[in-house]
Length: 82
Image (cartoon, rainbow, N blue to C red):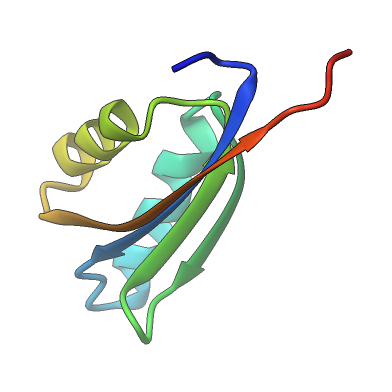
């Protein structure tokens, strides 16, 4: 995968409490490759966008959250040349 492509990924992660959502937000903020994020604690959904390899990002999140990460959908978009 070329890093000129923008990737959007939807994941399901068990986010039981507000502290879990806050921890997830902190983890995503520290990942430089992620440009946008949305965390839905009620439905246990996390959506991220950016220039990244989706498998590597899912593995990083799983290691840092110590929870199972289920990738539901991945969409690739081509970025306009700069």
